[in-house]
Length: 336
Picture 1 (cartoon, one colour):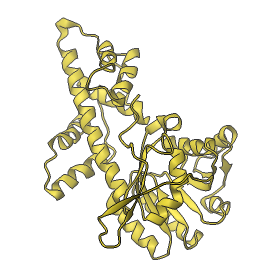
Picture 2: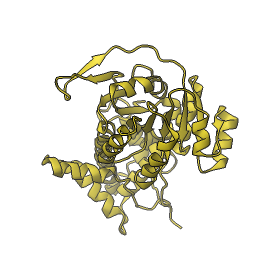
Picture 3: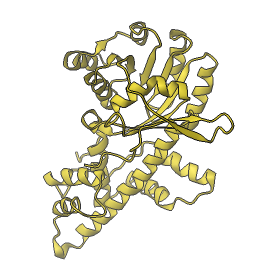
Picture 4: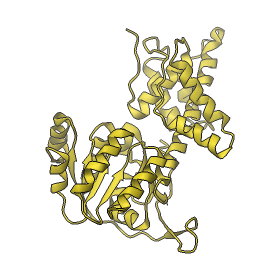
């Protein structure tokens, strides 16, 4: 099963003469570490569990005590009663990894962390923050000599078992400090993570990744709706998607998930044709406008999602909805 598009695990450092020029460094085997994970939802909880299973210690905090208790029991998570309590349980250079909703919640949490941390400590934002906001956060934390990493994270609800694709934006020093954690979260220590550049570049890369994802999903949705529309052929959509998984040039993880979802119900009569958008598709479209680079497929895929949020009967929208649920655990609207 194809699990992502990041295949080179490497740290890249800026050359002094040109900040846009990078050189690849050799990696050394990482050590076990102790970090704090703030936000133990679908992604954060699984990431904490994967780290623990790979020998790291994780102090966890979430607003849900039930989630903390469950992970403490099943994964030996070190529980904490508050963010302050979580930070107090770290020693030496403190690394705090956040998996929180983008926007004001993340901004406020970073501000609240500043008085709890020391010079040289590191904050990692692994959520889907806007890359421009990440640049601002990095600059602000630099004033306090606190390191910052923006880490675009892909892998959805399957990351616990299969690993995550990690797109890292940070200084060389911060990237090397967090390297053992990245190795444990990725599919293998050598593959699935990449230090793509300075602060902001990680979330920028993830934003473009999600824009591409929109286009791929829309293509599958339109094609499958066309297959279903030729009613006289009575084509079994579930069988076709399973067929395409083997030898076809369109085979992919998205196709794998779609085929699995359609095995139980190819008519999708109980699913509302409503497809939400998380925001990164919008940011990608804006970026295309700002750069003056045409991106009609990515932009149109976003517009189609807007259309689905109005009243519609489209089968293709239902396909998009089950794909989002399959890879990311996003809620599907069901009739009634």
